[in-house]
Image 1 (cartoon, helix red, strand yellow):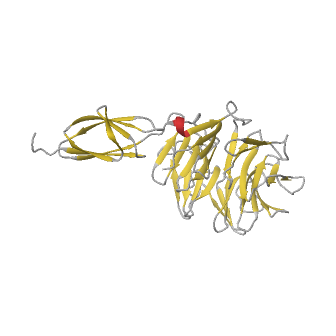
Image 2 (image 1 turned 135 degrees about the vertical axis):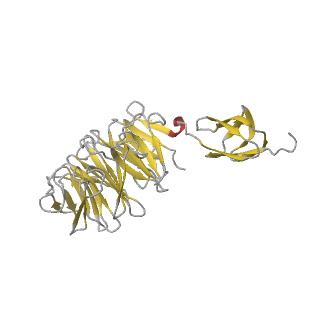
Image 3 (image 1 turned 120 degrees about the horizontal axis):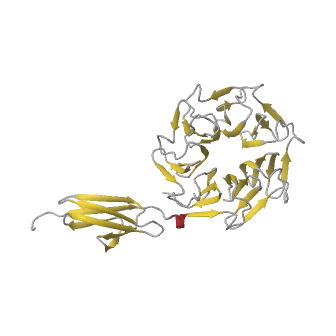
Length: 384
């Protein structure tokens, strides 16, 4: 009717530049934009953007209002995910254990039984006991030292690789308590710290070792699964079943689920963020306690359970952080992105993941995500 004020619709999408149809009529606009002079009514809104799934919503608009339509476009997995496996690539096995990225953006993939793989984006190079001096084909961990040097830990010792030659360390040339080396990290003084399956914590100065175990130190377990060094050179030692120990070279402190608020005593990974928070991946089918994710700020634990937060699974296997500070979390029931407030879940139903059981996650220099599944997965989205 004459004199009646009409309404407005504000269209916003993430990402922008989406094409909009209103009641099946294509508008000559892309988001964001404002559509004015609308009469009240019932509208069908269709949005389309390359590499994203078409989205449709219905909206009722009243007279003399300005309504905002915000739509987060859903990625089309075909464009954002790529899976490498024994059927479609050069990888010798689908059994992935660890993924790390070096300073040249090469992906180094540890396997369960087929050695170490290097992927430069086009070619896989295989290092195994048949074609190299790597001590064992079951890779427990990879440590990127930089300057072209990396370390691998295996069931039969550990090794340093400089791009052309290997130096192998085991019981034959070092006083190791155990050849099954689970993890390795380097501290601020150039000392290497290694975890073992049954021999405790190993300090290695490049020539000799010092052993710390349950009997001669404050270490709560001889099964050391992961080690991280913080900005103060404090060693954070994750055990398999007895929580976390910290060690400054003299003093020990233990955190566990019995006397502290640590969510679970089976520790898979400890990641330190830019503000010094320790993010702790926990959980195993061996434990009756529910696992999950813990954050320790230096005084208090904050726990994220799968049952009451956005965490997709109770067993957290690995952690990685992107350039924006978001945490990428691999679990037994999918992949999660967590920015400290919001969760985004990726699984076999809503993404290109071929399975929900994920053993490792890494973020490369292009901010692409790499996951160990049944094979190797690459995800180029999730960067906003």
